[in-house]
Amino acid sequence: MKASLLIDNELVQASNGALSSRRNPVTGAVYTEFAAATPEDALAAVTSAAAAFLVWSKSSPGQRRDILLNAARLLKERAEPFMQTMVGETGASRP
Image (cartoon, rainbow, N blue to C red; front, side):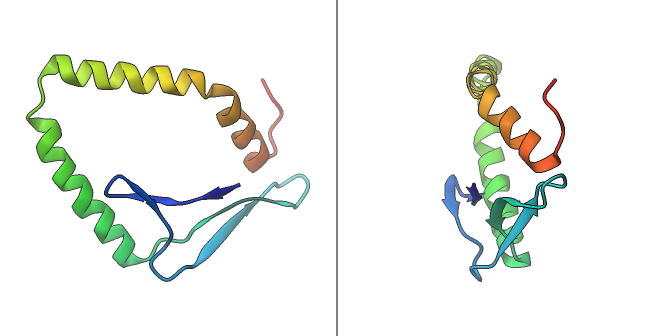
């Protein structure tokens, strides 16, 4: 599994192309590779989040509710792959 950074609503790699990995502590196998963000990447993410907050703060409570309910629905739909990732990264057994 490869994971990217989400900056300005786009999936991107680290600006220097660096990757890091997470190993399953039980097997020792690399389970996930992910973009290793630089300080510049972090600044770009914070800048983007601050701009997004301006839009969010102007939305109505009803709009916010709808967005959060949709996020909850998506999380439920993706619960199984999410759980598989957590098990693979932590070496934990399934509940």
